[in-house]
Image (cartoon, rainbow, N blue to C red; front, side, top):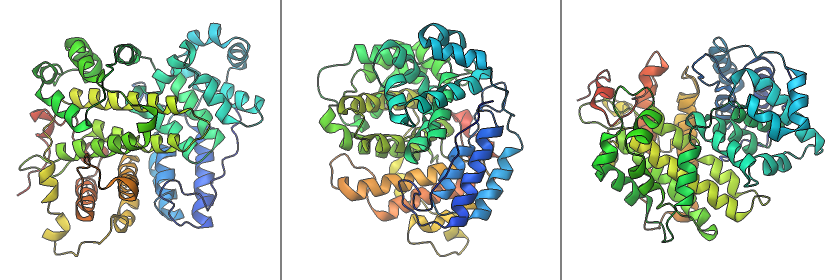
Length: 448
């Protein structure tokens, strides 16, 4: 395969949360990220399930985990990864010589991940290490070639975007190249709805995102579209049985360049509000929805994007529009679960029932997340919740659209996550899948 760039995570860069770290954790994170890049494929089975090691290690590092916790988490998740195949230099040369002609032959095919990885590494090298120029040309230019790759970036429940996000946040060319390569081997199955939503976007200002979510739940066409036995509730449900109704909602999404920062905060907070409200079902333990959770875990990407002066304001607005549209599609695909956010405010953590004293700040729970042996989703969600809290507290807590009010409510969101994920023995039991369906809750333990 390709010879990757050397990954070096500096001790003074722990990402958006700016958590203090030490050299041992920084060196361990760098070492294991390098090993993952050199030895593992982006998928670990024929169904296209994703390797999350990059996300997990950087989320642990970025929330203050020590080197022992980081190494243990890596060991837990490397056991089932696929070894990456050898690179085919002829394919890479073909892509380099004429991307427009060659790429369609290899895009969407997982076995060509190492070829795309080497291709994007070479493209970065050709520009003297300037990965921003490669991103601008291949992803953000706005022509048909770039839009095809940009649509693939949003595929696979946003996993290519999440991989790419960590490379951009930590400014690691190797991970940026891996994110672009991962993007290239995904199918482009969302292009049609993204293109139509953009083409038919309404001229009037966008309402609050809460209004859009509630409009989806009130639409009987959308509530009936996904079926519990659909293999994929977006592609087999929403986009087959109610595409016009879905586009009626997504065409209401419109973000002006001058609105980007505030609408980013609203997108982030509303994704949490909807998912947290769906995580509480009367009589059941708190369980976050596995699919809605990805729309929270990907949201820090847009904070990082907004901090990049080389990305045009119009492009930032466009990227945010796409994210909001897909948030709405995902919510509809999960059978529009009721949003019981008032129940979050009165949530009683399990620690209270066990006579333990509650912590005073969400960050105080991070050490408990660090020792959960899981595949990375939990620590990513814990980190994202805190990133959003800091963003809202810094500039937007008095805005009319803010729904999550008070430090105690943010703390309860973390306890809800911890209570549903700390003790289950396998990853599947940590989440509900498609929380709007009664069937999704049948195996979730009852709670008084």
